Image 1: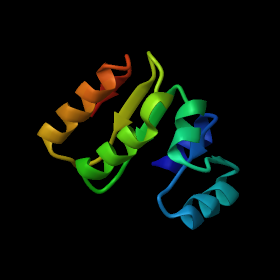
Image 2: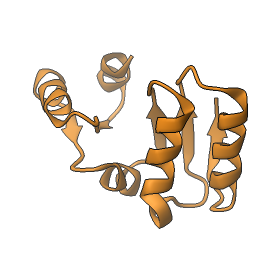
Image 3: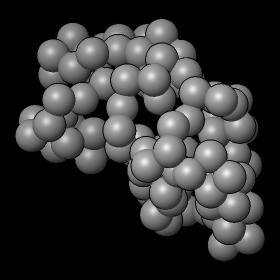
Image 4: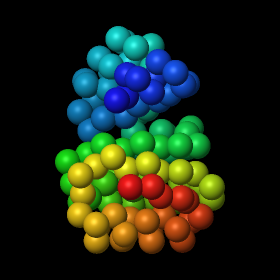
Length: 100
């Protein structure tokens, strides 16, 4: 999915395993973020695809105040509905939109 997005849009990638992000960046010419905060600072739209809602919440809350009003988080994780609702509510307080 990331390769298809990167082929059509200016993109930046981050992965919890830095070597995977670096390899993807070399293969696709995509910018690599040093950390999730750098990616959120750069992007208007953020797409996540993590194992569960627990990891999504850790990343989202770990970014903290870097989220900006009217950013969009598209979560492609196969997460729990209750987890997604909690993430959406947390982001809503910063004016960030959430699509699961």
